[in-house]
Image (tube, rainbow, N blue to C red; front, side, top):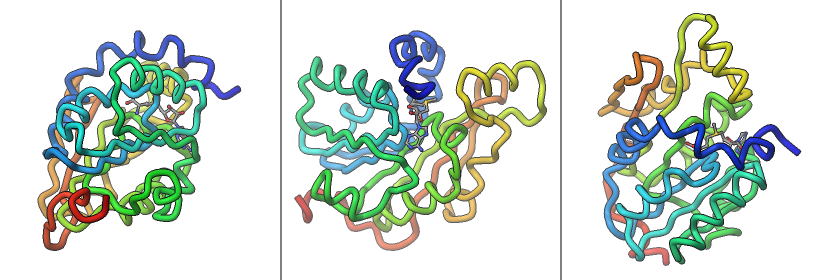
Length: 212
Ligand SMILES: C[S@@+](CC[C@H](N)C(=O)[O-])C[C@H]1O[C@@H](n2cnc3c(N)ncnc32)[C@H](O)[C@@H]1O
């Protein structure tokens, strides 16, 4: 049983303070009805209500996570809300690929990618970013929300302990390098950031109209 399987029952209570940057990250996706959204390391699905409100019943929400315990909590939310347009994938984000998405959802590319509090935890996050970036359609939006604590101090030690991650990672850098309209804002005393940008190339509208 992984760390996140163990803490899954209490995760949402412990994450109560993440609402504002979470809302900001989803707002940065500029969701439209019918969009296909990939939520990497989706955990218990705390982003799902915000994403569902943006994409509507005609959209598709794909949540991927490594922890069966976290996914079970996400599945519970989906069932309680009656969302029929959510696909949950139990997989290591390091294996993300068009084939994996197609196998589980029928679509190989997405309109939007979101990763909240994930890249500070996922091992080899740069490879995961590259894999997910390759799945984003031209004109699609990518948003990251995460901790970044520059100096090692008791606070960063505490965060690293409860997340089993590394909050000193500069996990926005790859996105900054890829996008021309890159934006970066911090909150919670400058320790949490929301970074976002658009994939270069012609925007062709939501994928759902052509591929589903
Ligand atoms: C701090 S939680 C964030 C959950 C959610 N994104 C949120 O904003 O609340 C980190 C999540 O990353 C997941 N995770 C860690 N390593 C992973 C991997 N290699 N592949 C997929 N998910 C992973 C954990 O299972 C956990 O659900």
